[in-house]
Length: 122
Image (cartoon, rainbow, N blue to C red; front, side, top):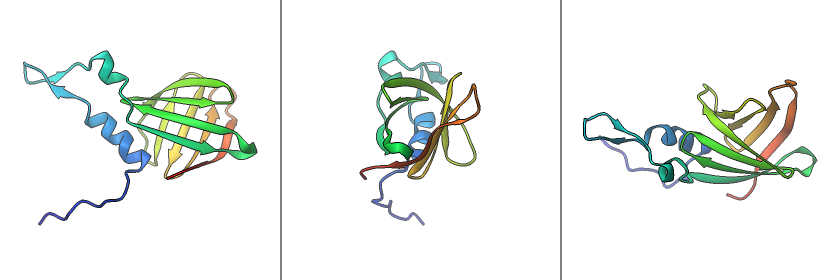
């Protein structure tokens, strides 16, 4: 028996999972069709966070990537599948998100660049 869908908003984890599965289409040969440049930059979700020290972070999620803007910097990170929550990384930073809390690790030093980040707004 099917149950009605909940009216609850989707979490970032669910949106990231959907970005992996919901953006592909079937091509003429029956296989997956390549994403167009417009589709690959389609904004899935945007979130704002406030981290320790009052640092504000804005995250824009797109299929397979996220742009993380903080302290006058902008980093484009690739989606990295994980068992607990969602993470995005590049050669410099990894942004971890689980529910309404997040943090950023500096991949070069191994230290936490941003800590105690809590989603603001809804």
